[in-house]
Image (cartoon, rainbow, N blue to C red):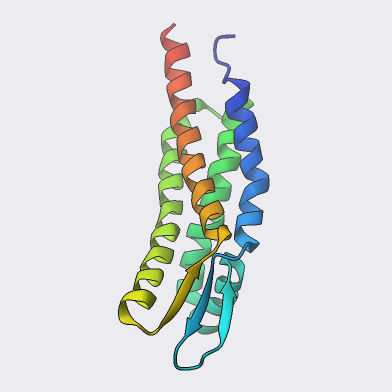
Length: 155
């Protein structure tokens, strides 16, 4: 059993492979600007589509933080779990997971800006909780995986 990761960690990580795409398409929030009065549901994907039309540089950055970083992190962790990637790369994968947290921070800043400046109404929807939960679960899984590898290596 030396060198193996507990199967529960591997299964939880594989669940994230399916949950992240759901979180990308799920409604994060409903936004209503007072000036125009139109109400719109925003998801990670719909936000990215709007950004690509207006500011491709920012869209590329947000795409990396919201989609590429979490995908690389979860798939890399799966490769470690199934012994196709060295556990020495867990530190790098943990760093990539931290980059994904930047996207959650960006969303929080927008919500505060809308509410604080009084330019509109924002209602947080279930997709934001799912997206944030996936990011936090991914971080927790990488920490637990690293802890598990260290414990087994020391034994």
